[in-house]
Image (tube, rainbow, N blue to C red; front, side, top):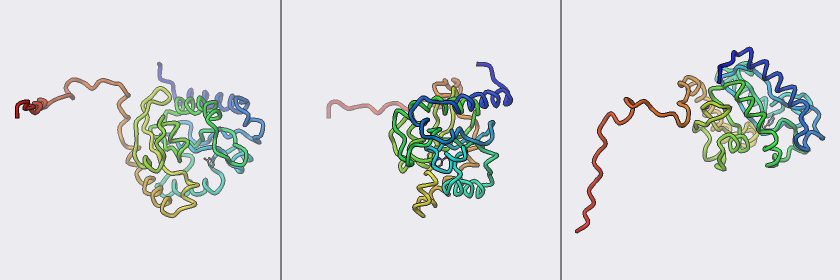
Length: 225
Ligand code: URA
């Protein structure tokens, strides 16, 4: 595939925004006030993916503008980042009624939009906030408590990307321990962003890089003792 310039990718993202704004792929479109497409830098190295819009987000059409969003802003600030440096979006682009958990069919209907966003923004690191985003983008049922703070490489949007699962800020608002762990994971972000792009999955390492040392002989199995 031919590389596209940042301006071309941005234009395609605006086109995608128009498409998502009119989306009726699942019943959530009936109850929403505004679609929450996501916001921030269209060429960001760092992307955050939350769960779904809440009441404030639905009213304003912007992600993370409620209490959890204020905490996200604060944590970004503590590591020298602002919203304009990153792109923030959600698994679902429309608010589930009463902020209930996303249903599997809703996630399925919405996920092509998230994949397209990743393809167009080309982030180096994607922070998945909480269980829903983590399970979707790591394609695993392992929950956030077991995997937070451990970067993984996944193929997303046609590229190998580092996925960095962290707690959802709403969970950190309910527990000081979770907040401290989230803070600690945030502190690793600058180091992660400095790492060279991950080797594409399935790529074969050059021969010179493999087996410089002769492989040790396997231990002999004594059949007669
Ligand atoms: N929680 C989310 O997961 N996303 C938002 O946009 C707001 C709160």
